[in-house]
Length: 369
Image 1: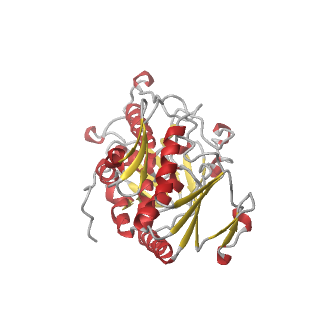
Image 2 (image 1 turned 60 degrees about the vertical axis):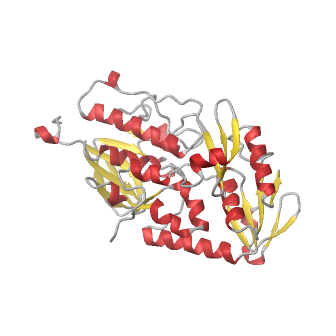
């Protein structure tokens, strides 16, 4: 195939990105003036995931964090649909599109169910807000970062609510150190959140209508509203009958090399939570994946040698879990902090402005339609 850039009259390479989440959106945006980019996503928008919990208690917050793909992908193509299979040269969607690629990026993250349109997603946040607002008592299942952050958001914005958090682990935030977990627990308790550790709720055998939930230890919890914040499996089921079926590990993640290519493939990359990289699955690390993979794709599309490609090196990272509007618990390499200082880093804006800016958008002003 002919190489070259559009300025020189060459042929652009066809790059298909599957998944418009944190990593997929950024890599598509980064490559849109370097190749013929097509983004395939079941939704017409990109959602900043770490802003979604704030949006449940303050729906207007979602106006900046739910972004049309077309707003940042101004020189690419968006196919709103679900990828269901891939071959050595094409991606097949559920709507019957067969999209040919020279280079493919898999960025399907974790499974999730989201509405197709931006307006429907904003309406969901409004509905979540109304349910939280009308409930006197709320049960949250799951004590990872999502459950802890959601409990904190509700406790700060609705201090009159009775909030109960049930977690099957021996401590909260098990991906962080014990010191950070203890600090988060004390913070929640100080805001009257009741935390029950080493207990679980059988979600298959409970009815929200009855407003009664029984834990694994036999304890009964009464709550007007249930919010489930447990982990979701990787979004790789659609690949199990594809040419990448042998590249999926036992956890459902794609095996990648140091350049973020799927092992054994020269022209297929994987980025974000779908990869088997041994590190905490965090949004800003997915962004780092996207930038490294974009750099490597530019080398390959320009006919460069593989030795010029960049390696991705996982290392210790800072972890910040927001606790409402002003506080946060942060774990750095040498210390753990809680309160206003780490809160200044994350909690006020939740990196929404920074993320919008990274996509080439105004961090504050909304587009008008």
